[in-house]
Amino acid sequence: MLFISAIAKPRDEYVISLYAGFMGQLIFSTNVSLDGCVDHQEGIADDETHAYFIHLMDECGAMLWGRVTYEMMESCWPAVARGEMEAPPIIREWAVKLDAKPKYVVSSTRNDFPWTNSCHIAGDLRTGVQNLKDATPAGVLLGSGKLAAELDRLDLIDEYMFLVQPRVVGHGPTLYGSGLPNTRHLELISAKPLSNGVVAMRYRRAPTKP
View 1: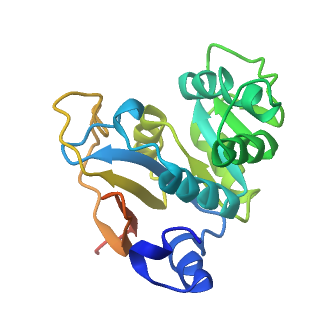
View 2 (view 1 turned 90 degrees about the horizontal axis):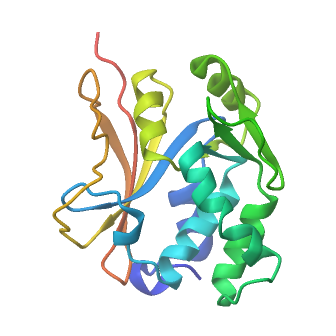
């Protein structure tokens, strides 16, 4: 079972504590280094982290990306899912499940998204994403850093699930490098160490103080 050696919890208890309870929420998840870098090439990409993201994706009803992230995913994973590229079993599992998952894309420059189960969110960003949240009881998993900053400015992100990498990389891009209008106060839901040194952190927005 995922991470069992690292946290010594029964399977059901672990999955419930880390993944359950999204209920129509928008969850931003990404890898981030100790100095705030979100470069996807700087994260640990082993079986343990892939298993984490597979289970996280399983628990959510849809994926949400910006165009750049979508095109990066589109360039690789459909071919892996079809068996046209060699890949280890856990990578193929990720690709097959991602292929089947509803995928929503925010873009003002592209409107054709042929990858299986892909949908375009056009027009007003707040309205489009709120409608997606309302229509997705299992929750929406957001995986684009720049889009996350835009949606956070609109107060649309409910939870944050970060894989904190045991690395100081010394370069960008950095998390929310474009800034936010004010500080986001969060409440810790869980912190789970992985055997590879990564820590899976789950936070939710703290209630606004009167």
